[in-house]
Image 1 (cartoon, rainbow, N blue to C red):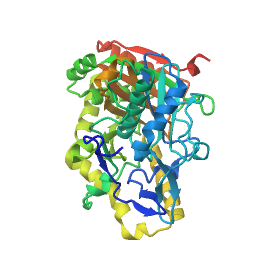
Image 2: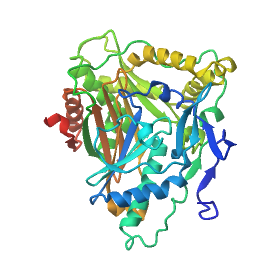
Image 3: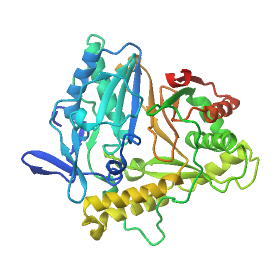
Image 4: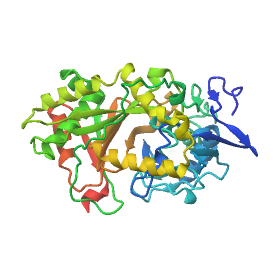
Length: 443
């Protein structure tokens, strides 16, 4: 599709694209450089975003929709290659990967050799369409765009009469921008810049589910009730949810006792609004909600306040720029750039291994998902799920749609005590919650 066909679609070629035998290639963004090094069967670095429709999914139509949309979203039409000094993306002209009925747990490792070398997969189950993405490609922002376009095209195919005014093209207003916004907005780090935490944090442990199994708990809550509850604590919805999770870990895992290690919850921050970026590549940094219980019996209100103050002190343009600059500084170091990839991989694994135990969990909010008017009547809700990673046996992810917040826990532990406490504290704040789980908790 050209800009002449839809002048409101903003298309930029990647900043680092060359042509060699008509095959385009480009560099990975700063964050993406980590994921190929640490990815494995046990740590897939794959996230899932799902759209739940109001009718059962037709596999043939879904396959056709993916086939039609993929060529218009070049970010996803890539395969990963290893060069002498860095990994890089290369244009993938193989057939679109097959759409299959869901048969594995969410966030399973994507074996590229069995997936036409693509780094995403589309599955379905009942009324649900799942998009799973290897994080090196893009973050939740790019994943949402791709999933929505798949859903739009699917609905145009399955409801031609109701949507006969809609043309088979991607939506207007989409920025297909593949710039590396990390490098574009990089400013040389000053001497006060610091990296991510490396000191040990509380690790949530316990009896595990079976190998490869992931326990999923979805919850759905009215946004207006969450706003009212958060307002009582002087918090945003995100701060309130993170604070409630930290309190649940303190109460149920630490049993309200003092700890020499802090509860450290990583919170991804989308940088696009701070830098006026529309890149389809990754563009986020992590901040840390840290709570170190130095005494016994902290109240819920005390923990919420500590977390709110902690996050508020970090999520500001100055600090976010400091983190961005630190992260990119190693990539721009001339000497490090000339180190062979095999040595870089060894060093990155060592650094990641040392820092993995500095995080208790990750809670991410990919924001409000807006759907074009003709399609709203066909879509019930959206959900997002994070896969497990080293040192983190439980994670949370949320998004909102049509006035409802979806908050999902993913865990490889049998115990549900932390999740139950989390929901109990929300219920005590007059929030109505509906909950559903996958089968692992009923076996």
